Image (cartoon, rainbow, N blue to C red; front, side, top):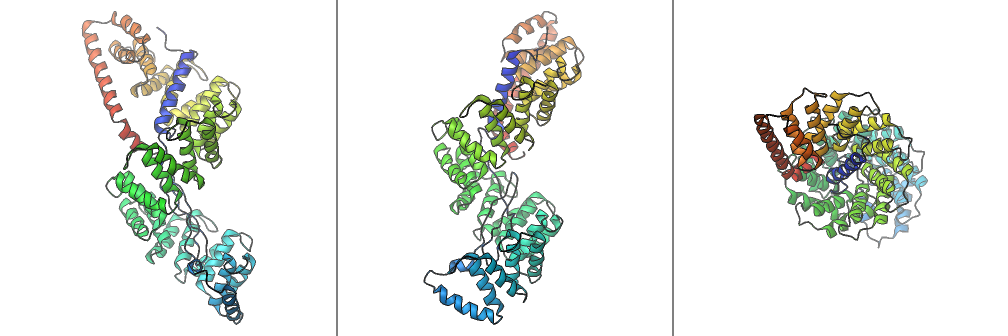
Amino acid sequence: MNITSVNDNSFRRIAVAVCCLFISLSAGYGTGETQINRDSEVAGSASNVPSYPSNDAHHPSAALPSDPSDDEGDDIDWEERRQALLMAAEEGDAEAQNELGRMYANGRGIDQDNAEAVKWYRLAAEQGYASALNSLGNMYFRGKGVAQDDAEAVKWYRLAAKQEHALAQYNLGYMYEKGRGVPQDDVEAVKWYRLAAEQGYASALNNLGFMYSEGRGVPQDNAEAVKRYRLAAEQGEAKALTNLGFMYFEGRGVPQDDAEAVKRYRLAAEKGEAKALNNLGFMYQNGWGVPRNYVEAVKWYRLAAEKGEAIGQYNLGSRYFFGQGVAQDDAEAVKWYRLAAEQGNASAQHALGNMYSDGRGVAQDDAEAVKWYRLAAEQDDPHAKFSLGNMYYGGRGVPQDNTKALKWYRLAAEQGILPAQYNLGIMYYAGEGTFKDYYEAYKWNRLAAERGHANAQNNLGIMYATGRGTPKDYVQAYKWIDTASRKISRAISTREKLEARMTDEQVAEAQKLSRGAYEGRETERSLSGFLRRLLLWGL
């Protein structure tokens, strides 16, 4: 009675097929992805420089602080204003120098000229004018009109922040958070975000909320995170609205409420926030807080994708792949996967690798598949690790190498990839890429069996029957082989042969255990939608 061989082609087909199913359930290939965002780039002063939230479920998204000059009407006589400001600026008026610098920086009523902007900002800054100090920091941060220099940016931000300039405090917090121009220090980042937040600056409130959410520089506290997100959202801050929606989606610091999540996502999406556009599409795709509607999902994903949002691009590609809300189109799927993959989205890199591996929407190319799998695997994507293991095992796009296949299967298996656990059990049993090790084979087959992998269940039963890797136990052997027989017919004959060696009492006990195992698995499957939802955001 031999265990399923790793050389058996049916093993490879089954493993790959199960992996595809697993991916569709948990990697976003079928479910889509949603994410929170939080500020993590430098905010502008009265001038127009973006702020940027982050998070890795999760990730950053840019926002532009308001520029007072943008609120001024088009009926202004800009030349008259420039002349008046120039006269005052040349007489040493710091406010006029700052305003003139802002006109040059923004190109309002005058040809845009960063060097001139820096000149006037510097003159005002040298007089200690706080807004100019911050704006000069922005110019160094962006490398506009001066050589890019984070340390110089920090210098000017700090001078402005000491005058309680909220945007400079926020910017200084960002520099500490990212370790730009200063050693990375979350505690210092929180300190400066808090000072800006206490002045009501919305982006700082949002970032402070994120720090509480992630427990960075402060003890982790979802209620405190929600408090800050809500204060920022009440000012219309799009990223805070998105983050608050995410907290409702996860039930963190507030009762879980999909409808409330959708409400916040929609408000942020109406402001053009890319991650909110994606998240709203995600809710429509899954029917959470709104009726399921793939066409609506595609609409919102497309808006996010066209803004360059990588996860939106990936999710739109997946809708083309599955033909959900749009006509099925592999070439369009590849197009959007590639755009997301080139931005470093690991799920998209893995999906693009699959398209090259299968020759869908592109010419079949194993070397290209391996390239994209490797990029995703290097970002710790477990599905890509499994796929890379398959490529090494089959010698596709790389020289055949069981040792490397085993390495990648183990890495994927340790992250819970079911077919990787099964394949690892087979390779240890057969001694492929390693010495034969029945104890390791038992360990990995059992893990896969307990998660419902029928071939692993059958193999585990055989290991109990033969006493390989575990003490011989016909009752346990029957239990697992009988459980497997509900899905694979060859287990039936194995069970019948085993039954002939058992007493009636042993068979009755084993059948009882098998029924219990099967019913438990069915209960788990009935909860799978709920569990997937909980697990999706624990990645």
